Amino acid sequence: MRVMIIGASGQLGYELSKVLQTHDPIKTYVSQEIAGGIKLDLTDYHSVEDFIIKKKPDVVINAAAFTDVDGCEVNKEKAFKINAEAVKHLVRASRVIEAYLVHVSTDYVFDGIKGLYREDDIPNPINYYGLTKLLGEAYVLSYDDSLIVRTSGVFRDKGFPIYAYKTLKEGKEVLAFKGYYSPISAKKLAEAINELITYRKSGIIHVAGERISRYELALKIKELYNLSGKVIEVDNIKGWIARRPFDSSLDISKAKKILSIDFYSIDDNLRFMVI
Image (cartoon, rainbow, N blue to C red; front, side, top):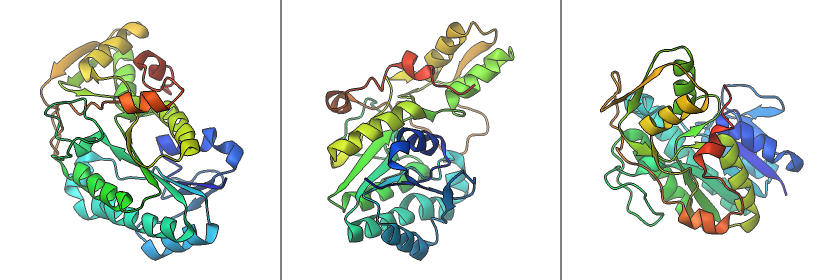
């Protein structure tokens, strides 16, 4: 099975490269060079399609995205090109070579009013990042042989858990947004995607961690590592530009029935922080 990882230099892409190494994956990156990787500008749509069609992978995993939520509000053109328009061309190329397409999306396609969102709940993004990711989903759903993996708060060497650990270790205050999500380590998400590929499911599936508030998560990290800093729960973070959903947690019951691994345990996921 020939596998292509789009965005192999990111947190998830790095872990996917490791878990799929027996398949000798074709790895692409945008700016951060990686060993054995091939530079691919996702906004050069003709080159993207040409590259995929010539390489003829059996599976294309799109782990690339412009994930800076505030950055998407400021640079909407870039966000649209990478999170939406580029996905259309990944779909076009995958369809030509009949490749199975796995596209990684986000809990931010939801407004955060109710939380524990199911796959069939109606999206309603409240920021531009979520909107562009939802548009990308629409392109993917136009192709029958595809799977959208929605996830939440992916972390490895960056993300809220890493920020909390480092800040608390320095004895400083962690500002934790008063809201809920479903954080998952990049390693666990990669392992889940690796298993899902073998089933060749289509449609949408939520793969994420257990529902938890950032405040509770920071307290858990503080206790787990016996750190000296203080955790403060806040309604908003100074400097934020984009609105954040209050409770974007995902219902993962469907994935629990399909997958054989424990991808969701908070304690287990925290073991794979790179700190």
